[in-house]
Image 1: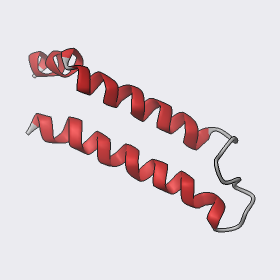
Image 2 (image 1 turned 90 degrees about the vertical axis):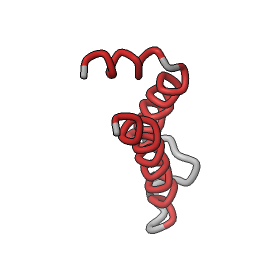
Image 3 (image 1 turned 180 degrees about the vertical axis):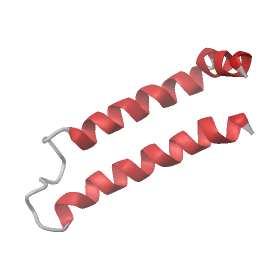
Image 4 (image 1 turned 30 degrees about the vertical axis):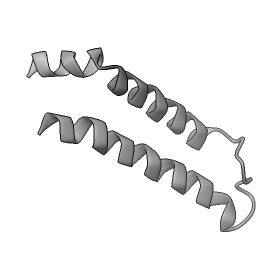
Length: 67
């Protein structure tokens, strides 16, 4: 199990996925958005889309690689 975890960190695509997920989560937490959050419904849509992209990349690169 530990050997498989190390191979994930050696793969450049996995490292890029980790960096992208971290940057994506920072964007979600950040008050600076493409569409401001104070606009009632539309303001949250870009955060939801960013969260869905982060989840899909996480599943694609980390959950499927462990199977």
